[in-house]
Length: 222
Ligand code: NDP
Image (cartoon, rainbow, N blue to C red; front, side, top):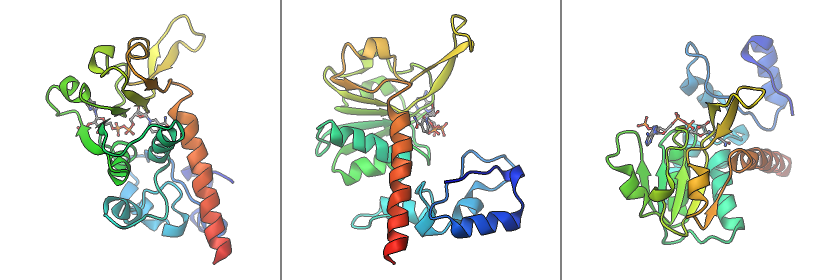
């Protein structure tokens, strides 16, 4: 596995490296002068280990179709639920956030797993009322500790994707990382909850490795 930055290689080298690789991930967001859409469309479907190619996302959204790759963070969220023995079928799932990277694909994956899915975003009125109905909450808004303990139904499962830096003068770095959920309050109410850091983050890395391995196996089998 190798990585390089936009300024670190010439276009010809980049093309050669992409030719040998079995998986390609573009670290987003890109600088404003580079079109994210164009770059993601250039990645071949078979190497799209992040699952962000429009055709992979399109298949994820369609009934009866399967993308070659599912996006890593959303796949990690589902894996956490499945491996913890939390059933998804028929459950009320609320996803907070609708980004292309997390909120939208995780809501599509939950639908594929037969959950009843509601997506909350920045224009949603009274999000706490909707979140309080959830059996499963996936928080991916990028808003530090926005979801309070009182917003959570007792026993609900909370997957906190949010990773936000907040000032903390007691730390050498001057900051600490917190999720979108107020962990101290929420852990007293929730049945299951992921910590930040150390919850979804490592799962994202594991799913990236899994996607890369799956992609390499497909190439070898061909
Ligand atoms: P984006 O900023 O792209 O999207 C945030 C989403 O949250 C938007 O859909 C936005 O709504 C919604 N939102 C913002 N504020 C509110 C609010 N007050 N109430 C309800 N919804 C709100 O972020 P990402 O999806 O890229 O990332 C989300 C978080 O997850 C970040 O903290 C990021 O660092 C973290 N992250 C963690 C990963 C991990 O591996 N642990 C991987 C990727 C992300 P609207 O569409 O209306 O603007």
